[in-house]
Image (cartoon, rainbow, N blue to C red; front, top):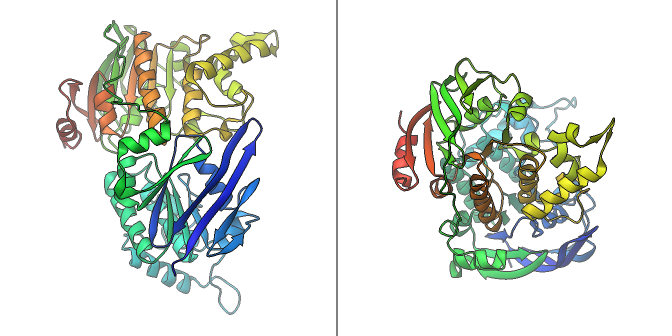
Length: 497
């Protein structure tokens, strides 16, 4: 008889929010089950309950017929459960083998670490998965992809029978995703119970066997992957047919004067980068990982030093020593890493939204709380941020709602933004919210903002941007209009040496 994991009537509430409402489903060994839903649907809450991080208000977890209650993440690990999060749980300064064996380092007879045995056992796992990793290499020196592989090896070393992947491919390239999928296939063949959370539906159809769809904390559909299609899943997640996402966009046709002009810009990474962005225009930056797209955003925003070249804003040369100078000049950046660089997670929604305009909403030495509330309420309504209160900590929001908080900050009525730089704004958010973000970008352009849109998803760059600038190895290799752009010609420019 195969092993199984079963959730029965799982419910969890927070003040003003029912995160899970009577969720029941079963996952079998040797199968990959996709857990899908919009941001805020309850996926992360369910994984946190399974991992022992939080306790359900109602319901049971049953493993092979036995009811389980996990008092802590360590207790869940002891019971064979591993959750591999998008934010890796590793110590960068320690070696691969030390990260694979946390809390379980083999000891010699005199109670010191048996490094020979540690290396030998780690190498056996590395060889099993066929990875080009040195067991003694510090994890911090590995690529993001191979750090992800170390997480998988750690789960395997623990002999975990249940392994959950939470948005594992968000930071990976296509080639790295193939390596991860190969590892998952090996785990599947060994009879592991695998739960896979992703917003990338193409991956779901490639790697999974069953699909469970959550919406607003409730289970709305369970089905076999082979018997479904993307449109059916989107409708189940969103609760409506969103049609052709790109064809339905209300675009801006009124392109104005040049707002930003970059001339022969060079940094440690960039080489003679030249381009311009006009008011009401959406410029897409495309390229493979490491092409220099984020570096362009950081240089324009004053976050990275410039070696040569110049930046002109509204036709006038500007020099930014730090991001504060760029913000004062009307440039805003929504960074790729929203949690580490875009938000203060232990501050409220209201505090994060009003951060750049505190001087404008003071009453003498004190903050004008009414003004703060008005700006926060404006953003919550404008962007449909799902929250019971503007005083909720941003760390408690879903990824999509966190992204909306950042957008609300830079487009509030109290700040004069001319140029909005969006670096991977749809990373880790669901298909319904992606459609909202695409229309938001068009709305920014219709409002007269100049927009730079960076994305690793080539399809959305081609379909959202008015013009696509393609980069390779710190250079601009070409520019194409939306009408001319195809995946083939953009990729050929992106791979041009």
